Image (tube, rainbow, N blue to C red; front, side, top):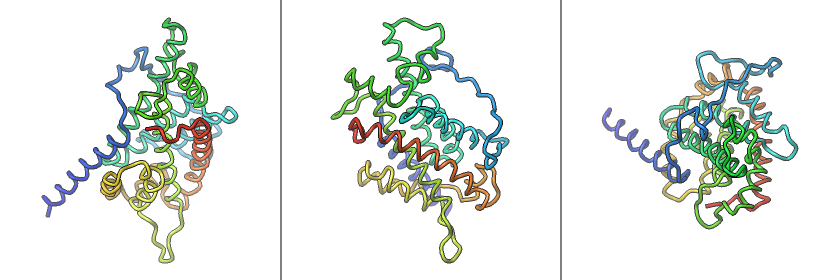
Length: 288
């Protein structure tokens, strides 16, 4: 019985790895170490007062809902645009969130982490080219906060103007990478929405596995092959129980979790809708 279970888990892990490598393929290598020009270190941000009382600091864990909210709100500080650096910082927090869900989801979070790093590297590369290859004393001056990838809109405009976006073949572009992050953000948002739903008539809540499966069907399955869609079923079996998700936002009950989750969901929805509008306007939603 134990050997059978181990074989099932091993098979699930292999299929999960195939799923996320296939669905998030990008030509990319191992990035340089933190502190180099192409991968600057990011200083910890100072804590701010006046945060939503629905959020509390969770000692002993990397994911902090208050930090995620601060970054999501910063994304929206310019009208009809999404600022890139806080967008990527939001993903830094969501990666911590996903990594806490176990090894199976860890395959997914690893690919997302690579994409976040790739956007930062592309920003530095193109911003340096904009300045005729001259290096700035501070490498972050070429990064998403100040460079040509300052926002989703500016990234799209720069890459389209330079012919860097492949509409018929896969290319290493910021637009294609952000599109993959955009789809993944929808999956995370739908999972959080599912966790706020009321129980059924018998008082039973949907399991995180059921919620993850339904979110996948909407956000990612339309972009996957038949084989990958069926292989994905094995991933959701390994998701932890609802109590684990509640602990991530430092609450002890469903009633405590709902206000905090809904606040995060509203901010995510605004970020997702703005990104969707920009990508759709330029015909970038179906990049290969």
